[in-house]
Amino acid sequence: MRLISDCSNIETSSQIYREEEGKKIFLEHHEFEMVCNVVGVDSCIFRNITGERSCDYLFIFDKDKQQYNFLNNRGSVAYYVELKGIDLVGACEQLHNSIDKTMTQIDSFDIYALVVSTRKFIPKYDNNEFYRAVKRLIRKNIQFEITPHTINL
Image 1: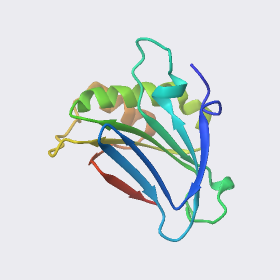
Image 2 (image 1 turned 120 degrees about the horizontal axis):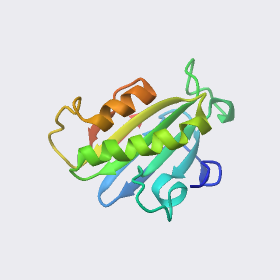
Image 3 (image 1 turned 45 degrees about the horizontal axis):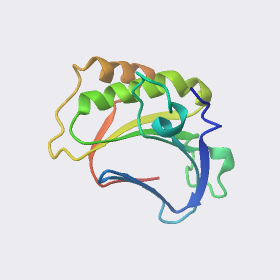
Image 4 (image 1 turned 60 degrees about the horizontal axis):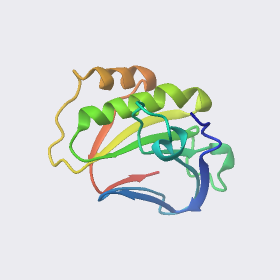
């Protein structure tokens, strides 16, 4: 397993965009350019590791590296994102594995978990063991959204 810092690509823009097999995520701010470390979790951190399911991306917004104070009074934030078709239980497992094995590298960040799905109806996943495990790790619910999804920062 590689480190987050080894897999990080810095992007500076008012909109950060990723797409995978028709699923799309946009992170944007209408007024300011953001500095974002975009990390390919499954394509870099967990690359060539068999048996480890991992999420697609990690978007890191370090408050100290921003040119503008678009985060306002919030601290640094990180978004673990899985772009998924319909296997939402599997998405929870992928998020859990990724967060569990990498969150110590960004322990001062406020961590969010997001599944962007093609599924039109998102059922509740409170009884899923991986959903509950992620919730314990980040102390928040996993967000489930329909593609394309935009996060306004």
